[in-house]
Image 1 (tube, rainbow, N blue to C red):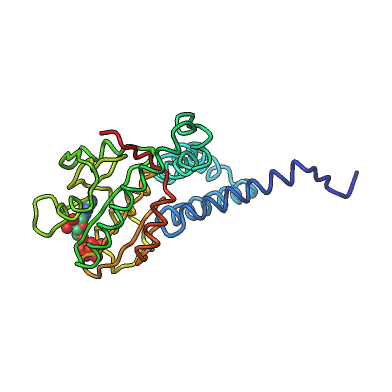
Image 2 (cartoon, rainbow, N blue to C red):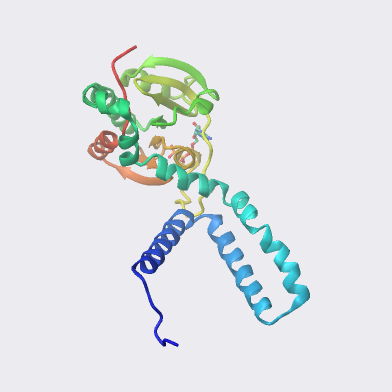
Length: 265
Ligand SMILES: Nc1ncnc2c1ncn2[C@@H]1O[C@H](COP(=O)(O)OP(=O)(O)OP(=O)(O)O)[C@@H](O)[C@H]1O
């Protein structure tokens, strides 16, 4: 019998892939209640292995039933995280570029036209930041956010900085909630976004920021928050909030998102 364990290249690859997946899983659930649930489930699993090793029949079969439905329970418990993980893969720009034949033919035109709209969005944010006007702008990407548009007032108007500033002007009927921008249109205002239940978010941040993180956790949208309290601009993508960025950083971030804003009405 050989004393050495034969390790094939595929085994090394296998281990590296599992390590990579576990690390991604850790990044995805760290700072959320899902992390504690995961640790809890892992401890139950370890305990079950111990029970089996000690041949404790009754407890072993009892726990076996529990572990048996484990996969189903995992899917139910980690539904938001699984959804976010799949979203992460599906909204990867490289994957999208590869899959989108349409974009292959229209990318040049879309880029030059979208620049105008993106400039107006950052100008509006700059002005609202100066006047400490609270705002939440959600820019749709692949997901058109139809379910969320339905929660607000449909506007369907061309993007303009003046219109955005008017919508968020204090005490106007539409200033509450989020504005959703879809392609070259301000699709709706007063929209209700899902709130994140992240525990590691700055406790000083309120519902507007939680709504920005919530919508980007659940969809591939890009969210911009202008704080009414501080006048700071923050952005959120894939559930990650970047606080207090400059207008130049906002413009750069907007340039990097993939949206097809063409000039058609
Ligand atoms: N679920 C939601 N979806 C969209 N907008 C929301 C939601 N909940 C609250 N808001 C908006 O956030 C506003 C309240 O903001 P709040 O002061 O709690 O947040 P904040 O993160 O501290 O922001 P600010 O720095 O501007 O005060 C509400 O008036 C409303 O416009």
